[in-house]
Length: 291
Ligand code: SF4
Image 1 (cartoon, rainbow, N blue to C red):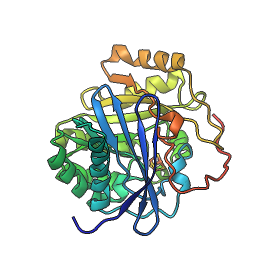
Image 2 (cartoon, rainbow, N blue to C red; image 1 turned 60 degrees about the horizontal axis):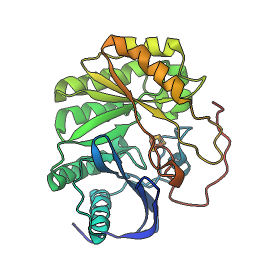
Image 3 (tube, rainbow, N blue to C red; image 1 turned 120 degrees about the vertical axis):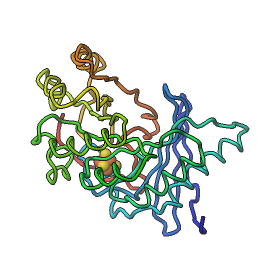
Image 4 (cartoon, rainbow, N blue to C red; image 1 turned 180 degrees about the horizontal axis):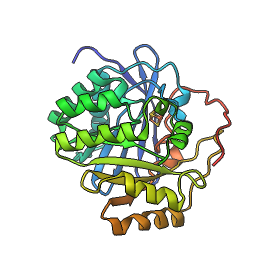
């Protein structure tokens, strides 16, 4: 690894043991990395860009621009420094997962992400490293052809194109059908299911019709669904959906054989949850689509 700078600026830990690291890079750009533990065990969520140009309207990282690509070294070093932090506290962490789903759209930093995934795979011995994309179709096809290290997550978040375009502006380029066609190709070529992330918003994408459309869209042999709950961000007007509605939505999928589960929110109190990462302050007040 060439000389790479990642200086620790802040470290925040919540009562459950989730830790958020704020790093300053050599050019003074800032990124965040999160350690958390869930059903699979302890893992890390690494950033791949210094912000994000995809512009998802529910995500704080979209406010941080311009977004430059992190080098493979900068991506891998996040994991190594988190590991070092734990070891300095007398904890040898048996990493169970690494996900390239922090700040940034990994498929817009394709070469560095694939290289970093290869190195992380070799370093940790973890079976697969996962990455979440908002649906960059050409890169999904490319990844299907060449990487066996990456478990693909696709953020769908809607069952109709009009709704999806409002939530994920870059999805104006590719329809839901095109994204799922690419994901189907990935699942078949790589021989593993693609995880579909579905962030539930009350009154936007949580109707019974949405559940039925989701069932029609996703082949249980090729896809698995993770339901996510929105984590609060200051200045954003979405509301977090109730656990009851998430359970109801999930239950509608159960008889179909489509594997689906709600994912726990981690690190909300320290702004370390999905969609909450924003490393460069001040955090601007911003009024967003109301949920
Ligand atoms: S959710 Fe992901 S792709 Fe969308 S703006 Fe945030 S970091 Fe970018």
